[in-house]
Image 1 (cartoon, rainbow, N blue to C red):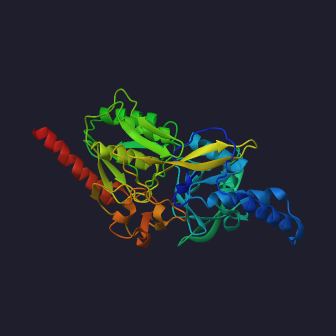
Image 2 (image 1 turned 30 degrees about the vertical axis):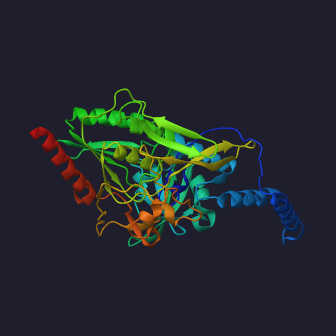
Image 3 (image 1 turned 45 degrees about the vertical axis):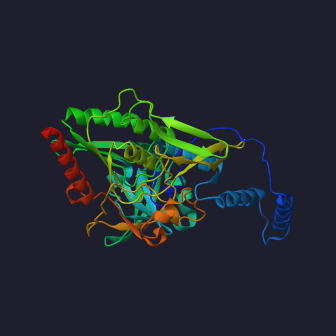
Length: 427
């Protein structure tokens, strides 16, 4: 089960495993603040209405401290860290549902084709109100996800509310090993190939190359890469994916922090440079997906089409701790090959085409980075260049797949690619 939509936005674009050094405090008032913290903790332990275990109190304090930094830094308990590791591997025991949130509601964005949830008839837009009889509104997203995952062969009961069909209904599902294939391809017509990249994981670049090989054998002359709703993933995997389309040794992305600077170069000796590309993006195209979009745009390798992307331009480092927990800490900002920061601002498409959502497809409002509490400002001041104040925009995204022939963004991409192919043929 993959967490998507509003919640997936906390996922790091880069995971770098390392140790934790000694803390150094430059603030002269730190000792006073730590003394106040100790006094508050002692008063809670002594006078709170019920006896408390120290672990949840201290965990809550650490989580609050880290959450005050920015939207993407996070203290993860051992269980939460384990869930993150599962997410990045793309294989786990579960029921096969991609989920999103709308306020406190947990919604099915889409069942994974062929999964237990898909076979049982769970649909996009369904609200998950209980897991094994426990309310998801009380459990929260992380605990709900944890309860839906588990050993393959074990059962779990999801209580679903579906508007217009039934008030609520129980679905008893048997967990299976769910393997997430992040890339799917098909031909849109006799010349145009289509590749959707759902997220970035260890095997994404390999899946992309395999998909392109198949499309070329089917007669592909131009390619649509669909990065809409792609929340990102691992930084190195975004570099590998970008390297498929950029000449070797070119800068794909660079990152700059207080203690680090590093430029990542394309590293594929046989990139695809001979066919035109259109990349589809929207407001949920984030982090690693923005790295790929920005690199292809800077090298004029692709036409970017759609709406302004999410705007996550920060790098998170995973720092494992001795008890199995971990700190996900923002340690750097990343920049496109031309030196642009997309923080808050996002990638501006070369061709702006707003998604038209058919009346029979449900939609959901979603935020961008600029809407998140404690977000970083763009270091170049690019946020002020947004033509419409970003915080006043309501972004609507479809729940479920719009048929290709009704998807106006795909149809616009087809027209652009067919025109480019015709221009080359006429030379």
